[in-house]
Amino acid sequence: MPLKSRLSEIVPPNPADLIESLRDFGYTLPSALADLIDNSLAASAKRITIIVEPDTPVPHIAVIDDGAGMSESRLVEAMRMGTLGPSLERSVADLGRFGLGLKTASLSQGRCVTVVTKHKGKCSIRRWDLDHVRKSGDWQLLGEPTAAAEIYRRRLTGMAQGTAVVIEDLDRSTFLDSSQVSRATHLAKALDEIRGHLGMVFHRFIEEDGLEIRLGEGIVPSWDPFLVSRSTRLSTERLRLINERGEIVVLPFVLPHHSRMSDEEHERAAGPLGWNAHQGFYIYRCRRLIVPGTWLNLRLKKEEHYKLARIRVDLPNTMDNRWQLNVMKSHVAAPSALLDDFKRIASDVRRQASEVYRLRGERQIPAKAKSEHFVWRREVTRTGVRFRIDRTHPVLRALLHSGCEHDAVLASVIALVESTIPVAAMLQEPQKAIDGAVHNGPPMELDLLIDMLLCIEHHLIRTGKNREEARKLVLSCEPFVQCKTQVLDRLRERTTALQESDE
Image (cartoon, rainbow, N blue to C red; front, side, top):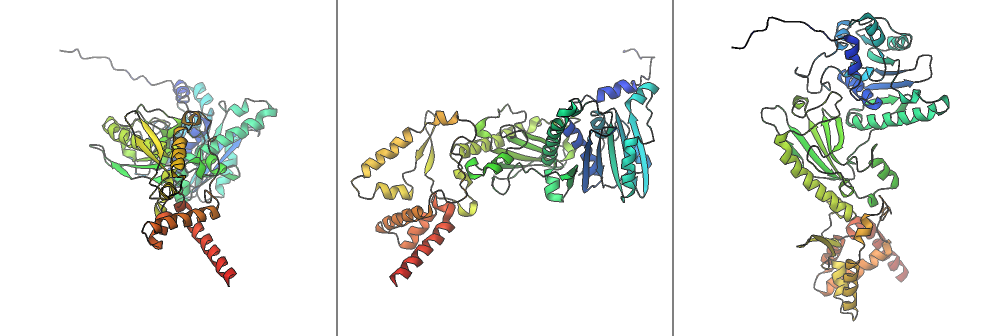
């Protein structure tokens, strides 16, 4: 029989050393601020202001919101290390996880954090000061504001409710380490990183709920990673895990080829980290972005020709443990039971994204104007995949079977073009170097397209189709389908002009 231990000791952690360890979870300034905004959203805030002040007598960072605020007892509990842990059930919209975010995120950037909150007309204040904790050797939570926190206490008196988190003794802010001459440059870079990160992480709250996040005097713009109005949206899938409540909603997108975007649109769609970094699955938890592009634990590489593949995954907060969500809410791993599903989805979206990348977006034609005939077609051979010009395309068929003595020569020229496309050289070109032209309008001059349209119509009529059938067929083909309205408008103008000249 095992021996029963007679020894039982309570060994509390050293407060200062434990807090020092909690500071090193790996937060950056943008990710720390995102964690603080999670708390603001949990309090139903609609307007959040972030102030980064490096030059006052006391440099500090503050996050102020107009949320519900906290009672004094609720504030004390919120300042506890590990309140409302991961095993407790949360509301469906609760962005918390371990009950550490407010403290660890704040203290990752400075050694002193004060929370000032106003709830039902009453202001309450509590402060963690790491130097005081080390000196006292105890978990002493202070109740007086610092000089910097007092500024925000006065600010809250003019608000119906709200909370301010004030971080001081900034010992992790790189812009403070630079000389006075270069500080402005480093601060501007830090603010750009904050703006980009927060606009990405909370873009759905900004777009769907009207959330306003201010960085200083400027409003943080949202960044839609899926370019919803321009991209091809694939079928939604709903996945479930055995013995888990809720479902996982997967919505894939294939973004348009860069030739279909302006340079400004293309640069913005690249995102804060660039095109290649942002491909893959976008993991959201309660609509808050956790990971902005990953192929999860599927052993798939991020490669240039898959950069147009972006897949939205919505997770409920009831599956945190199964997805291995970390303290900073910045990492997940797909449960083993779902790996086959995610591998299947990833493979399909990567294939379609690769086709768009290589074929200049032939699959990006809007559904209401879908082409029946493309100029290029994909063929699978025993040795791989090749792309050939489709000789059944009405334009090419009309040219190849016009009865002209040059028909055979034209067929040979088409074969020559197919066999000499420098695919290897094209793939080695830098990003955007291949056909960087922006086609916001017709791919050719309208008059040339109309001449081609009339020529092909004439050929089809000679083969037995009536004029209406012939025109409908031609207008359903690439490139006419992409600019059908402009072609028909110009054709009517030309016809009207001819009629007037005859009169």
